[in-house]
Length: 483
Image 1 (tube, rainbow, N blue to C red):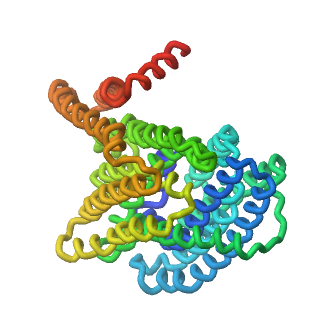
Image 2: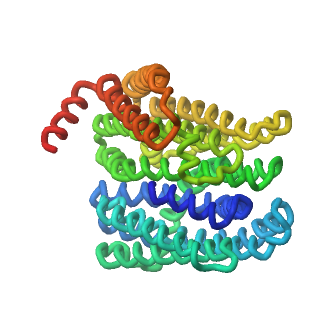
Image 3: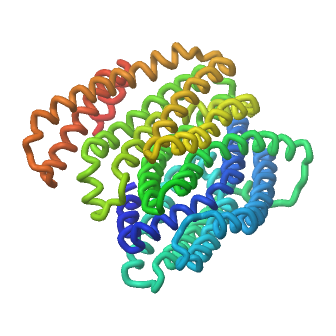
């Protein structure tokens, strides 16, 4: 997360606000087609984890070969869509300085190839996670960000057109990581050996699951990347740069909490496969609550000190970046509560009604945002709509939890939402009075360090006493005693 934020600063400095906005925008067009990959990614994770939970090695090998075949087909489809609809949109509808048209097209093609590499990588990545080889997942992740840091620093010294150079380096990064995942899985897991097979009924089952995941993921992609395109219709690429920077922060926070949940998701699916619904329920509640608290701990110092952090991070801060980043953090905090609920629903394999209803509400983000901007020329308004829709989809997911597993929304509220509400309310009130107490200090690095330290301690204490149950507090004490 730290490396990601630091490299964003270097990229912004080297590219400038306009080119950074172009890169964010062009990458967003390619990511719009990435919903095809995201749909199969969730299916792959679910079926691999389910087979491992059942202990069916023969079916596991069949599943891997089937999903790999489907991912190859998806990569071909993304290539076709990108070179037709996507290319048409970039060259005829997108707003950017016309003297950058050559660079825009090079960046677009590099982004398309990078997206295809990510598609092919999914089955290998999913198998590592399903096998719960988290140390490998961590090592490759650390190597990836260090390599990214090296490539970004090289921008300072190389590249006549730094926008093109950056796009090519990102492509090379994706190629290296793809090869690492494939090399490890081929060496360690026999089921990763590909065999051409076609089981019509099983393919139909996978595609049915993926088809409804496709709808949900298309909605999710439209919610994030689509908003960037909507903003481009009303504002300059400088606003796109601000949105792109907020997306970097959102992605960094999302990756942070996803790394925690990566270890949990296979267990939720395996508990369901084994019929152990009580342990599954406990894990869902704990994961939802701790995901929010993890983001709260790192998010509050950023929200309170956002202006100073942006000056320290970026130096030249594009217009609206401050409010965009704060609202992005609030959005990802709220959305993180739903992650374990999504995994639980996917574990059943019965996702048609869920995806149809939730996806439809998520889709509303774009037309509502477009309508809002037609009447009000306030770009941050799209984030308010985003947060409102996120609250609504959380409520809908709680209802599906009741329908599928008999888990009462009142129980979820009691063990998760009410504790989150108590923690946030007391924390905000406490920080309000604490900040008034030492606001006489100059807004410099010493003030920032002191302020962040106080916020961190207060957040942890309030979470410990108000956010955790007695059994959870005892567990924390045991861990601290061992340390």
